[in-house]
Length: 215
Length: 215
Image (cartoon, rainbow over all chains, first blue to last red; front, side):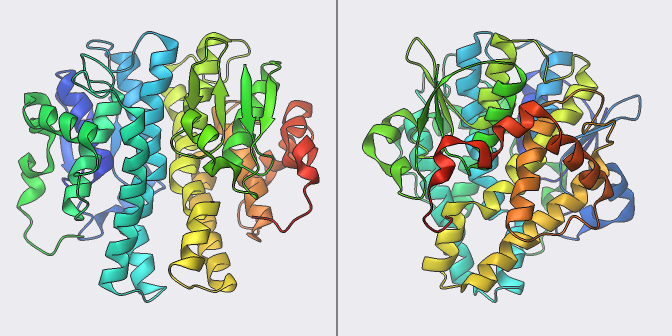
């Protein structure tokens, strides 16, 4: 399997966590969002959305969308399970994941920040305030949706944790305080001490050495 | 089961399609986004995100996030299947669904439009252009991701169709032409003639009678 990755992509970070938790090794190709490599014709032929991540299977199929990739990994490599067997718990884990993947992350990602700056002529401060607004309001809801024990929803990490760890990284990066979110702070500490999650962290990736301004 | 619904919510429309395709009947409660009922304390105690839809099960569990609800329905009521049994086809169907649910819909929904108008002081025309931009760019990718036969990805409707039909409704509502998207136009015609999808359409819902300005 070939994994198309970018160190600072929240969506790629989610899949890295799942690969790491399941102990899977993949060939990695780095798609620099900073240099706009996701817009190149070769990559777009693999992922028409021009977003990372993507996972190319050995038969040449290319899977896109981080949560669809994670669901695929769950069916192809079921152990350890990252989606609870109980359907109601599974729905809760997916709801946490989706509340991040749908209602927080897309509002602050690179292409949206660029549109706000370029098309709407918003200055850096207002783009930063926009990002913080959606992260903070999303985290307020998340704080009510999780029940650390010690992971988001129980004793083992799930797809919810695979999404929350990158969201916490993003909150810190964009200056959103976690002071009002004691449950999220508690799981953040658990993530920071968990080897498989630490190994997937942006700062631990080979392409993190890029020193140009953050996208 | 109690379904918390709003006629014009794209996310609620997705779940209505799945309920309809599976022939499930639910008790319905209408949460008027127009009147801000989703912000009330009673509803927020059920869904901390203050978004529709939500599905309350007979044991009192409340499921949120349209795609998590659909995955639950798929495990609890597996026939007809809305997620292909083949893991790669399932990943493709989920990727179409997620490209809509993550990368198109959240950027144009009511709370975002309100923020653009109220906080960023953008006029109606610029908010409309913002919505059209994300719908059109998302649909450009979708056009490459689907293969009508005659549904999005094959002979039977899947979770991808449950997301695309509402997105087409939204494109029409916000003035995005489908002229450049022949595949999407082809499935739109199929949806318009499919009784279960027609029954789930916003215009067919009991709460569609509200005559105040559209949110």
